[in-house]
Amino acid sequence: MQNKGFALVDSASLVPTNDPSVLFTTAGVQPLVPYIKGEKHPLGNKITNIQKCIRTQDIDEIGDKTHDTFFEMIGYWYLGAESAQEFGAIKRAGVQTSYELYFTDKGFNFDINKAYITCFSGNDLVPKDEETASYWMELGIPKERILFLPGNWWSTGEIGPCGPDSEIFYNVSNEDLGDLTLEQFEQADANQKLVEVGNTVFMLHNKTAQGLENLAQQNVDFGGGLERVVMASQGVDCVFDTDLFSPVYTYLKEHAKNQDVRALRIVSDHLRTSVLILSEQVAPSNTAQGYVLRRLIRRLYRFADVLGLSVDNVKEATTKIFEIYESVYNLTSAKDFIQTELIKEIEKFQKTLSSGMKNFEKMIAGEFSSKDIFNLYTTYGFPLELTYELLDEKKISYNKDEINKEIEQHKQASKTASAGMFKGGLAGNSEIETKYHTATHILHTVLRNMFGTTVEQKGSNINTERMRFDFSFTRALTPEEVKEVEDKVNEIISQDLPVTRYDTTYDEAKKMNAIGLFTDKYSDKVSVYQIGSPTDAFSTEICMGPHVTHTGTLGHFTVAKEESSSAGVRRIKGVLEI
Ligand code: SER
Image (tube, rainbow, N blue to C red; front, side):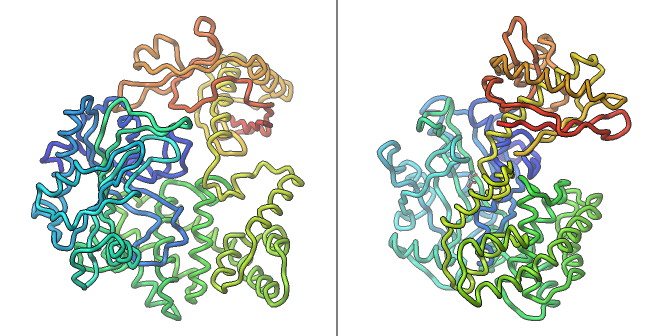
């Protein structure tokens, strides 16, 4: 791609650094969203990357031939067309580039006779994409191999940049499928004879709470899953048979006491994903990324148990994953942490699993209610998702709505703030986390006002239940000082000050006396968030946000703990009651 003038950007981390709306990077385009919306990328308007991604919404589909929770996405972008003519040009160029990449010897050299192309069939707002189809036909794709589908639309999330897309499907079966009707195509896709190996999104729109608007610029966003590309290249019809999985899969298979293929795939997949999450120093916990990790580890261990694998086998299997990813993602120094946390979590779960299984068996032996299902969780700590999965496997029906009601009642009763835990930490966390972001800025300034500007932020961490703020200070705060911190933060909250964002340059930010780290190596552009009026601001800080628009929405702030973090660094854990 570089010889075609694309600038290579490094993979961003799996845990997005400045986007609390998602727990993990789910697509190559995600770290580039600001540049899709109009910011200028410092490396120009043709970018390429290979981005590590995690998607756990498909977790129940793991076990088939083509789904995996971790994958690497090959991507390239044409950014910033500002006229219809410019957009037409990059649209044509985008199709041409994916053609070269997939179907010529400059790239993967896939057999064009096994390819099927899909384009957007149109709706009330956006027309049928005949234009893209015509570019494919110019390149020699027969008309009969181009299908128009209503689902050819891709979006970065519930809200955000989106647009019609054009997908490349590849026949990975041994059959010659020939031309297909729409119905036959859908059938072959469902049977995993056809696999989507590439997707070009025409990023034209931005979805907001109010509806669809046009983006300030048009872009072409291409992504293709490396695992599936490797699968097609290696002539296999299953990702677990590729070089990327076979070392770990084969190891597990050799040590398993039975050959349950689905279980082998689930353990291989979840172990690889867990290793890569752990490699970013995320530990299992009850919230956010840590909760997803906990769920993956529990699930992989449950299936390892089905296969009769020991904890040592699982530990040894991680070395097969290290062999593949060690040099790509610098895993060497993280290996100890990865294995220690993994085994610690498995050992914690072992007891719950064996006693939970016994109670589960006892429960299903007789009549049981939604409350009994819920009690397995509250009384024995047996994860609800595991109960659901076991019931599904045994084809026993249950009433999720009723169980959700139990959860609600339990939450009310215990007044727990652990909403994220019940939601699986998968969504809906952004609003409360946004509040904590703003509270962090207030706390930072309150501390500097009380103790001077030698107080500097040394770390910050936010989840749905609390904020944690580390700052340079050499002694413990007295109880009176803690009370004063709380009062001052609450005073700013009660003044309901406006929070304003400025998009500016580093130099301007410095002139505004903004506090923050001046270390971003790529872009000169920064966002500054100011709390209070511009002429008499309470706080001015460089930050990617997001923040609330008024401090009055933050609720009541209390310091849950003040403690030492390390030499010369104190740590405050703060809680908002909203
Ligand atoms: N964003 C699109 C996808 O993830 C193409 O890069 O499929």
